Amino acid sequence: MTDLLDSIDAKLSEMLTNSMHAYDITMNCLLGDTNLETVREDLYNTDKAINELHREVRREMIIHSAVNSRNLDIPLLLSYMTMSKDIERIGDYCKNLFEIAETGNSFAKGDDLDTYMELKNDIGKLIVYLQSCLNLDDESKVQDLITLGSSLNNDLDEKITALLEDKEKIQYPVATTLFYRYLKRIVSHIVNAATAIIMPTDQIDYLDE
Amino acid sequence: MVKMKKRPIVNILLATFFLYSFLVSIKLLEKGIKTLGAEYTDALFESVSNPFAGLLVGILCTVLVQSSSVTTATIVGLVGSGVLSLEYAIPMVMGANIGTTVTNTLVSFGHVRREQEFKRAFAASTMHDFFNLLVVIILFPLDLYTGLITRMAENGTDFIVATGFTATKPNSPIKAGIKWGSNNILDGLSSIPFIGNLSENSYRAYAVLLIIIAITFIFLSLRNVVSNMKSLMLNQIEFGLDKALARGGGLFAILIGILITFSVQSSSITTSILVPIVGSGILSIENAFPITLGANIGTTITAVLASFAVDDPAGLTIALHHVFFNLIGVIIVYPVKAIRNFPVNLAKGLSVITAKRRYIAILYVLVTFLLIPLLGVVLFN
Image 1 (cartoon, rainbow over the protein chains, first blue to last red):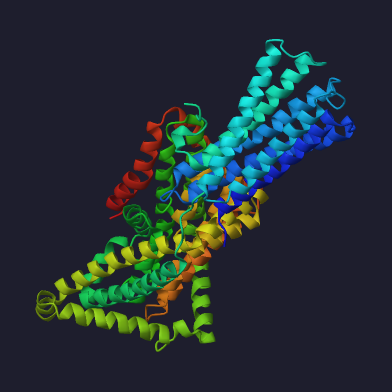
Image 2 (cartoon, rainbow over the protein chains, first blue to last red; image 1 turned 120 degrees about the vertical axis):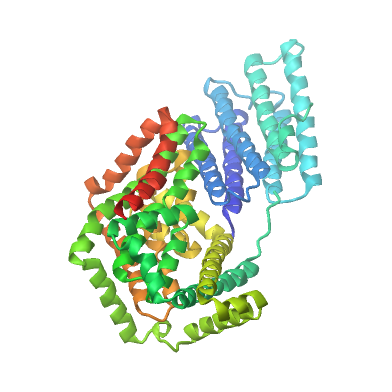
């Protein structure tokens, strides 16, 4: 029989499935011609589902702690706490990205569409990759994910810096800066969640230091 | 994520062994009491001839051993050996019900650093105290003057004996197995020169030694049954509480309380688990209450098991009295909202005071569970 820790793993995985869905429909709005009204309801409902799963994870951690008070794996629970928070934030940034589309900005017809599509796919793969790492005790795989995410974040940082320094002439400079910025936050949360799987409790989130 | 591996087979074997050791210990207690002789035991139990003194002794003993199961099992052993009458034993078992609530009240002190958390945790623990006090206030005089629950327990015993239920027969395999174990231990003890001499030359000292050994082993065996059953049932407890949380209170929560306590043989485990859950705020005090009531019913199984080890059917009668008392208590208190809310609101009221002045919480425990019972025992004697 599985225990509540397995149930927490399953809920984190479900949160990631929902996050992937939220990310996909949001990016389709920005990079395609999807109907925003239809997506809006779906996105906000998906985010609500992610938030509820986040609360369920917390509740199950409390029950697990109360029942196993004498043999508690505190670092593991702290990891779950930080991971669930990081995953929950992906949904919030998808809503921020959606707000860019809602204010009339679209990257569907620009010259950089291929670059954006590539970026969309790379980040989507990272979410799926994180999901596959949840139940694995494979440090090298998680390490690969952290390396990929960090490299992607460096690229996004360079793009943001270029826009801030006005080196690139594009149609929606503010929206594009925010777009990159939100994508960078999504990648950072994925990387942070990955650090929680393999790193010592005090080092979680502090990859650069 | 790396998680700890469990060893269910080891837990099953250990729980079975310690359950057997618990039953053998009850038999040893019966033997020790019988060896002591009637004139001594009569004098010993004279102090609980006053029902109020019996009630308070029940509270005190349970507070000292931190387990109502140890107290009730010992009482079953005493009743089963014929030295303690039902009349004296009943108030003691009721007292054990009150005394056992001290454990989760002590657990609530773990939340003392955060005011709101402590308020919820303390209310979650003391609602059990107030419930048991309320039930004793209602049922203790009722049973004392009408003998209603006692008659129900006696009729229940007659019915079970009449059905020929194997554990109640003097020559049942269960009783034979227990007797075999206790006889081997007695032989083993007699082969030790010091104890052998004692059994031949000073039977009273030998009886006292047997009683001490038996009570120690009842305590240790139950402790190990509880810890192994808890390890074995961890997942079920977690999922049971998770489901109870999702469904809110109600009969389902009572059932969860019964099942958890029944499986781990300790109401303190169930109620102590609830304290941090309520303290964290994810389970309301009102929804935790039925789980606590279920724990009160589930805990009675230990006394029933203990009755299988004794020869006299009176052992089963006191165990059934414990079952009916706790069952009727829930039936009286739970269905009507106004009555159901009474112990909960008392606990909430006290928790508001203790959250502001935490020394009152310590005073409450000392006065309720030590000072009043001690003074009462002295006064009533």
